Amino acid sequence: MTQVARQLEPLPLVHRPLFQSRPQAPLVSEFRRHVNDTGRPETFRAISTTKPPSGGMVKVLSEIHVSKQVRGDDTYAPCPICNAHGSQFLHGYLVWCEASEAIYAIGKECADALWEAGLLERAVSEFQQQQREASLEMILLDALPRVPLLLAWLEQHEPAAADTDRLSRAFKRSLSGNLAALEGAAKMGGQLWTAGDDGQLVLTGTMAGSAFCLAPTQAARQLNSAKQYLQGIMFGDDDAVLEYLTRMSLKEKQAASNAVTRSRQMLEKAAEQIRCAWDFTRPENLERINGWGGNQRDRISAIGGGWRVRINVGGKHWYDELKGLVAPAPIPALRKD
Ligand SMILES: [Zn+2]
Figure (tube, rainbow, N blue to C red):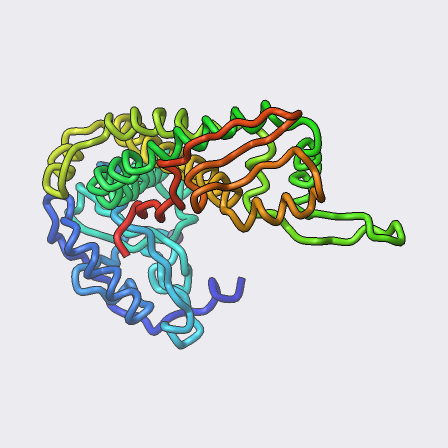
């Protein structure tokens, strides 16, 4: 590799024993800003460029990504372990060594061969674990204070879910006679084909909410399961969530994150089923369907602007009240915009 052979302008190597204990987050942020601005980890004010000690405690504080463009002179950053004056790496780690009370920017590949076996590897995997936990916390800090909004949405849509499921069961039972053809149309995305006078099939329209004619809905069950998940992670406002997070184990955080994700998926599923029931039972949609069916006795029709549905099949008919059915409102997001 040519960049390994290329030598940098030799800077005097410096040891800055500034950190008896692990440096705090603000210093790491400052380092990252410096690297973003200059592409030169080796010129950070608190960095040591001498060779780090080969033993003792090592902690990875950050990954380093050097932009060649920002660096600008076609060199890479030097690595104090393997190539203190050389052009060595773009991807590395900021590490703290307890033995020398110093921080170093080292290349990613500088592992076992150059350092005590497994030392860097252990520090890296510990760092990655911390990163995962930190990003999990970020997600939860956004999502958990919004759980009450999800629960409010859920409770607001319970009557609609009950109507959706009841009508779905009644409707599936009555899918005989001419209505049975609706199932076939639904499988084609709701396309309503009719044979013309010349025997050719003509597309006469598309029914809305056609999924309603397929599998029976289980919107209420989705909402019930989601409710159990959500009630288990109702901690309160931002402050209360922060307070909980400091006491939660990694496992509990993962469980909370799963509960948030799964409950929201369930709400989405319920909303989709409610949406289909709503679209399907709109008076104009039922008109279109009955028009497609031609002059038949088996019909499903809207009464009172869609608040009741009348189903006629096989010479019998019954009504279903849809007082709770609404077009579902958007589900609250899991993070603020
Ligand atoms: Zn190296």
